[in-house]
Image (cartoon, rainbow, N blue to C red):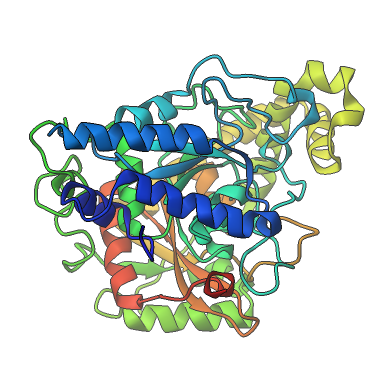
Amino acid sequence: MISSLPTIAKAAEQIRAREISPIDLVEYCLARIEQFDSRIHAWILVDADGAREQATRQQEMLDRGSELPPLAGIPIGIKDIIDVAGWPTKAGSPLRENHVATEDATLVRSLRSADAIILGKTVTTQFASFDPPPTRNPWNNLARTPGGSSSGSAAAVATEMCMAAIGSQTGGSIIRPASYCGVAGLKPTFGRVSLEGVVPLSEHLDHPGPIARSVRDLWAVYATIQRLVLAWQGTSVVETFGMRPVDPFGIEHLGSEPPPRRFYLIEQYFMEQASPDVQSITRSSLKKIQDAWSEECSLNLPASFAEVHLNHYRIMAHEAAEYHKRDYEAHRAEYAPNISKLIDDGFATSRKDYLAAREHQQQFQADVDAMLADELIAVMPSTHTTAPTCETTGDPKFNSPWSYAGVPTITIPCGIASDGMPCGLQLVGPRGGEAKLLQAAGWCEERIGFNDRPPILDE
């Protein structure tokens, strides 16, 4: 048995050195679920027997001298809008109570190909929209929201019920819950991770991505679901995870080398709209990375930013209404209030306004690409406040512009506010620039040195 949960890369190294076994990791996570989930409500399904069988098979392979794939032994949670063969994909809705997936989503197949242990399905808000979930934030007194809609994924990772989890973001549903729960999250470039087998909310805004406890853990999972991991035969797992010069992205010594470019704070809107606590923690974090940032390094938002939130909502509402049209007309009472409003607003959005919003999205994407030219990294708070109470999932206004733009975004925890809740630092990189963004975030993570954990873990 193990007394503390290692990082993914460290665990992979220890498994191959016979210091721990896959079953040790599985039992650790299952014990955390047993201890905490009656209060946190992060899971809708836990396949304890299946996880133990996978771990036992992997240990037998290791005992026979077989080389294990990169994520062997690593327990991972899957947001319940993503298909896992033989399991229901309920998407938080009573309409899908009897649904059973016939095959894995593409990203789940990628995880299985790396021998990740699929531990179970994590709670989502209804159809990944705005209605509050049963999940609770593990920080403070469980009275705060974990965010939405990847609420279960973020809370499960924060309480060490799994080593990583898959979430998705249409507005802010990877970055916001990760920030609220004091963990790391990556929203990749739009289209980088397959949406096949994922229940949609908005086809031009949905992004699957990982939530984990560190940037290196994000990298390990992202490289797998993006199917960029090197053929594992003959390549050590440490090399594959970017801790040696050989890896699919070319990230060398993730986090240990100076960043290749400077960070630029966006004062406009983001710092102006942030609470005093969030502003203070953000500036304190930036002082810790001042080798790559100075107060003179700032970016101005393009003029097109003024209409981002309006048009983001129009696209999301219109596309949600198109997807749900038949079920909504037949089963309106089964839809929760906030997703109902979104769909109603979608029906009220004219085709002309929708197409104008899509045109604006394309213009904003071009403007952001120009703003981040020369591979700049923009920084700002991940959220404008710490996690509010459970009547809401929180406000995605600091995240939805980057979902709308389709550029990669990472949050890392950077401090604890006066209310005892964590804050996140958000880094935004150029389209397709996950490698350098991960490198920059790893560098920041080491220097910020956030080591706090939810108090519940000390029980």
